[in-house]
Length: 117
Length: 443
Image 1 (cartoon, rainbow over the protein chains, first blue to last red):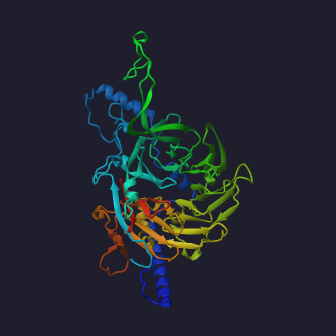
Image 2: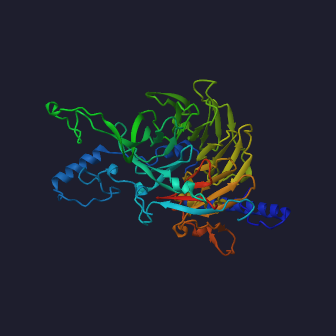
Image 3: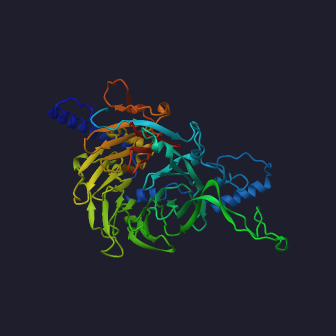
């Protein structure tokens, strides 16, 4: 049963309005599809293997040893100050060992465990 | 919504900070009550598990209050690196499942993308005092200095709750684990990733049986992935798994060792006239749960919760719309990836109600008997003891009624993906990003 927006109406009118709403939403959905097609004409077909394979590997961060070694070589040449600014390693910044934030989550307790009230 | 025997929900507690600046590690990724409802476990993106325990005073109070205090917290999983594939493995806890109680200790399974761990949580409230060979600091005494014998005694001490990993089940999944489910036999459990389901014995960590494998020989032929799996609550040979195409397969382990062929396929025939680019994506099932009595199951897809009768695979027996108004927003929801959000759903103890989350920190409760539903919000504004939650409404028409919020005003970054319902009482736990809300029935 869909959310009742007209809880007081008699059943017949309710059914009619329900169907109307359904039609409206269906039209809106097709409009949304048209919007998407207009923006991204090459949008991958959902359910296709390329689409699914992309989702299978979503969020996986790859490590490139070539980039890593290049960055290490570069940092050795231009001596980076002892306390470098820890930048977010996204985009242009290729992480080197001294810049990577240490993932020592085991030392940080969850905030849920600190009782406030 | 008062009267008619309808549940009125009121605020009980909220855990976590009210900081607007949320660290990614604090985002709650799963919530699970144990079988008695005494304990409530949460897992987060930082790989930590926090277990809350029902406050005994609140239980005895009149009227009864649903209050929980921190019982134990530990680091379950840590970030790892797969050197062979050059991949980072997230420490985020995807699922927690409790084992049934067999002894004073509590056991739970927690999993991240690749590794499942069995944790033992036990209490220690006594210590031994008066060793003959050791002093108070545990150092060995000089034997020649000992002139008398004493009998060590048990002394009470401040309660200590210890969590220790008892089993580590690793290296069995090439893809990301999305579900774990303990069998009713309490000896085995299954773990499911995108393409495979494995069966484990709780005592054995170096072996696992593959029971479902939907990986095609040629990956170009991949058409669907496994999204959730669960064992039947009482039939130890049956389990179900849902797919990204909106189907649920019921498998019987007695029929063959490899359950690639389902015993039953639950699929609602699609209305060809209503098909759109988004149809398949929004039909993807994000969660499937058996009812407590084992006769039904609920499936959550992007816009609805469907109740299926295990005896009827042609279509669901009930369908509850969560947020139909989102159909007019599908383009932007696809662009910002929200259309891929995985909402969970949950039964109440008597299988009469179903709860699921939505956006804007809204969550929905459906009563199967009265066919009535309510939309409530988990917000700090109502965070005062026993404040009754006001039903919320999303306005879709041009005219906005008083108290309604427009679809365009919804905050899609505040989503409730994880909810849990106490197995016996009307107490619900709702995870809103980094906060855990506990609501209870107004008594």
